Length: 363
Image (cartoon, rainbow, N blue to C red; front, side):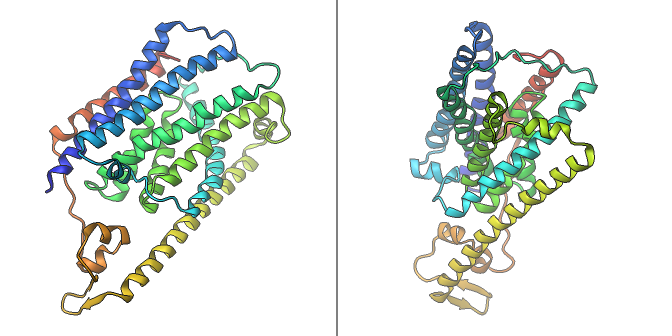
């Protein structure tokens, strides 16, 4: 087995360490820094310090350096490793998908919050009210901090190198489950752990199937943008979205369930359409390649013209055609020492998530 697989697992462990420990570190710093949060502007500034440091440093810069220098990659190879390839137009279908996911997230989050309230959990918020008059600068800042940075930085860390490495060791469904659980625990917040796990699994599924991180980034951005937009719309009574929560709250169980089922069906159709377009493009590309290829009748496999390049075979998704119908990817089973840090971090995130439930640490 290539030595780089073991190195990748350790690189991923160090990356997760940066994310988890960095988040805890920034929460502790902000908790004791006693920055003024008496007005919405001060609260936003305090949040900006926390978010910019956490996202840009611990979720993006440090992981990038780990993947590049410890992983011994060029910048281009690092981006490729993180599934940041060429952007394709059909990825924009992730925009309506993100809107649908936002609506579903509201429902799932509401149910989850209601359930933990039954166990005695108290939901509290110390954030000051928004200004009486709409401030465009605050709105833009909220979008940047809540939608842009998390969509780029969190996806790079979670659905980038982590998912790529996991696919070299586990079956697809296992990778999706692992990434979902890790993303949920990574938030270290009892109120977010459930719906973010589901979101993380969906983002991982899109990344695996499209072989690109962009659909997950766009869906993530759209979901978070909708959250910010609706909050402002409700507070300032905008015509578009201002009555969203009141409308949802006024419905009885049956029509509300029908709405969420319809939105869920729309999301599923959007995913299917995206994957259909992707598969059609893949088939068209294969047909073009096969025109200039030969066929080995003895071994029943396609022989590509020119110098053999495993990377090209993978990009064309022609492993079974080139290597034979019985081709099966050899999976690397990481040893305990390879994932020891990752397992330790899982324990830490479980503990910090429980702490937010029992004592409400940092919230």
